[in-house]
Image (cartoon, rainbow, N blue to C red; front, side, top):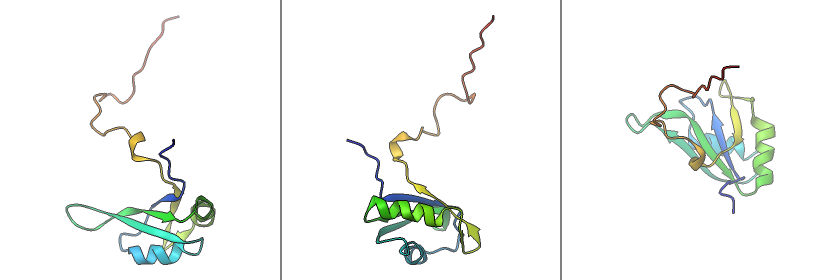
Length: 107
């Protein structure tokens, strides 16, 4: 069983003025939008510049990626792709502070 939701899109590089209803209207050109989740800053309540848009089918979601990725919306080129499941992301506080573990081999 995969936890990947092929209907759910990540939409980035949004104007901070963008509202959920504007996204719903815009993305419904590609199909039936079942939900729009604009990410807000917990402290300020302002948009964080990205959202998740969910379609009723994976086909519609893929059509939206093709139709809207790198297209201008409210003066900004959108980033639109299939959202990755949250579990895959590394926690920000992972113990490895150096960035990458370089292994040097002497030859």
